[in-house]
Image (tube, helix red, strand yellow):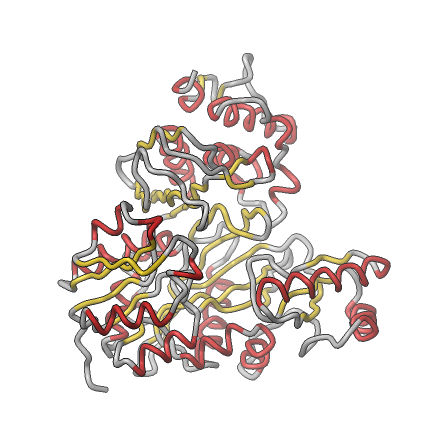
Length: 498
């Protein structure tokens, strides 16, 4: 295949991911273009770009999601390629088609791969032919309550009803018994219709106490596909991730190889090209099942970069230029351990609801093994129009224990005021015995987090109270006299904010 040189790239996104893509592009000598809404006019990613163009009002449906506007900027500024980041148009096959017609390279997979993997039922059918294990359930959308009852009795309760056209927990319902089936089905269909414009749902056996394991894959246009190990994403609220780590604390080398090879087969089922992530459920017995494939860069990709030494954005760009992967599977090795926490403007004591406001204080942490991917500065307001993520805090250590200790220190050093954030919750998780032992699953929040213990406290007291909560729930952990301490010493997080 003839190599295509990318000299200028437009980032069809905003915030921290736009800045992150720009860094790699600039290191490759590639000029960058930002598109932004009126709400983001003064955002750091706009200043970071070589060129920037406003494409509309704050609502994303009038700016970041308008394909014609993005394509028009590409034409006017003679852009060679577009990197979509994640979210917005990143998994929109129509967007990739429009760019191709305009002679612009889409840094991502083919529209076909996006369309197949964007439909969970089509995805299941594609991977089944490649021997990838699937959760027992329906092969297609259920036609109504009668069919749902028949399927549920066959695979037995509890079951999971899922939207065929999307993810993120929307259109998803756990049904514990038959008497709850009608209501669960109706709610799932309604949510799916409202969120995705498609009310199709299917049914799977609900895997109890599952772990959410995802595998990073890379594939070029020459038939080479590798897996870059796994990420553990089981700490979630509302079915959405908050904390990720790599590698998983529970995968053996043999299981890692099996799940990695299954992920490669998923990619090959749609002739995948570029960076993608295959998501699996892992049960207590060590069996894993395919859930879905995200045909884009993931929010949590930095932990994979930290343990592999790869720059995934650079690899995406090289593949889009027609280059072969410069390494083989046997060349990839795991180096140490990495953890990422998502710093959301959310209130952990109020069901993690968004807490919009102005960052009156914003000072991210620094030091060895600490990385912060952010899109905000002190004094900026958190827009109401977009996801409330302020930053991603990532750490790397030689061991998992060192990475946890480094994350605790980094959270203690992270100063944010003006909005509530998920940092106290993340500090709580780092100190909890279930997380420290690696024996946790996707129900961590339900089973271990007790918001009522944190209500009415400031950020520092929240973190300290979380440690007390951990002590109460685990008989083998003893908090020293005074309560608000760890290892006999006052928490730096607590003292700093007193």
